[in-house]
Length: 302
Image (cartoon, rainbow, N blue to C red; front, side, top):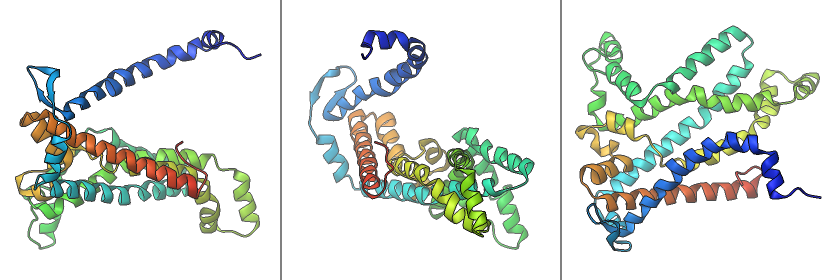
């Protein structure tokens, strides 16, 4: 006989109490703010409030599509997200496999610890370090360029350098911490598989190719789906701190545009409409990737 709901709640009360703060956090800070998307369909007036403001349907969505700057903003966001995905997705896999293959454990732990550290720095600190390093007068990178006999490069004043700086700093900041999930997957591989491969004459390269990489494929698929859905979720802080008027051609992304129009310009409805559009596109990307993954293989988010 199955226990009733009340008995199950009573039995699991300790676990439910432990889960309560997490649920409360998500309800208060993730779900309740979703109510604000209503203003993207209204001509929101700060003094009238949300419900008293007039309904305008899809007016602000049409505004964004007709905006001559819209294509440049969408292109910048898509290109940055795509480059970030292409470079940041495979790098932690390669680094995790290298960590796993290292035989000198003390050296491996040292390298792992050093690679994790940038993840715990804020975007403000990371951006400040970049500004100092790339300074045309005192930055180390330009000092080396001058030492080699070349003219200093004004990295932060040239639009063509913005994407390279953004992606390279993102990889430096996140690659170490992103290896954790793959290291956990590698630790779960049955050692008998390696033993069997060695008995068949497989060297370290063939063991990596036929045992290590297939063993972490489920983790790779899950991370692939999650990162694909986050292509449009770029760091506002970094784009805002590193971008300037000279690099606006490539540094102006959707989040900085929403900040300018919504917070500075006071067009809350317009900014909400843009943000909601991007959220819907991200959701569609995750849904599509998950469906493809479920049809092609056996791993999917749901």
